[in-house]
Amino acid sequence: MKSSGTATGVAQVSKAQAGETAGTRGQVARLILELGPCTAATLGGRLGLTPAAIRRHLDNLLAEGLIETRTARAYGSRGRGRPAKVFVITDAGRSAFEHAYDDLATSALRFLEQTCGPEAVAEFARQQVAETERRYLPVVAQAGDLRTRVQALADALSADGYAAAAGPAPAIADPGGTAGGAAGKQAGPGKSRAADVVGNGEQICQHHCPVAHVAAEFPQLCEAETEAFGRLLGTPVRRLATIAHGDGICTTHVTCTSRDMTPPSPEGSDI
Image (cartoon, rainbow, N blue to C red; front, side, top):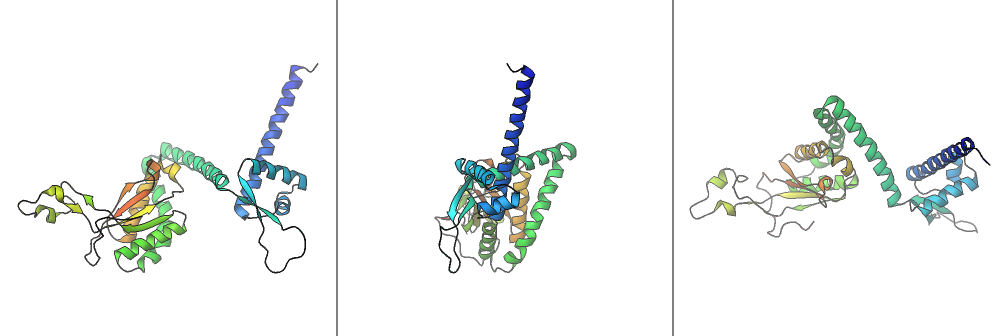
């Protein structure tokens, strides 16, 4: 009969081995994410694993739905034999890594806020957005009118994975006539301010947000991005909805301050 001490030792060893196995499996998945489609031989060689060991980890990742197999593309003529099989990361696998990074980023921002205050988080957000703004500026600046600049910004966002679209903004009722400024105050007799409408604008819709989970706790990220949009477009913008706060998409209304654009149709945007 085994003593309780021996049983505890065996359990600890088993737990350590399980942790080591999970860690190696994570390394395999991360390498596939970094390299793109790759063979088992490539993965085993990079990580120093035997064919049997790499196969075991790959089988587990396949069973968990984190990776999938595809047939390698053949360039030029190839000899006889079975086509090479490569492993690629799935959407679920990529999402697992994104959430892991989200947790780390959220913890880091919490620490920053606790030690240096909320303004430090806002400054961090502005610095993060500054690099993106610098990259987008030449693309947006060379566009012509506002509508073209908005489309150029949406295209740049899409290239960075935000799945953005641009188009005419739907008319927004302005009960107080505040958006119309002096025009609202000059409404003639018989005209109700409730009929004032904010028109002649554009909107950007972002259907994906890589930092949504972090921005849900730290809206400074969204605020810094919105401020950058206004500077890039050279006109006031307003964030109407965000994925971080549970909306389906991030929607930004862009105010048209020039009169050289054709007013949008009453139906508004189709995006």
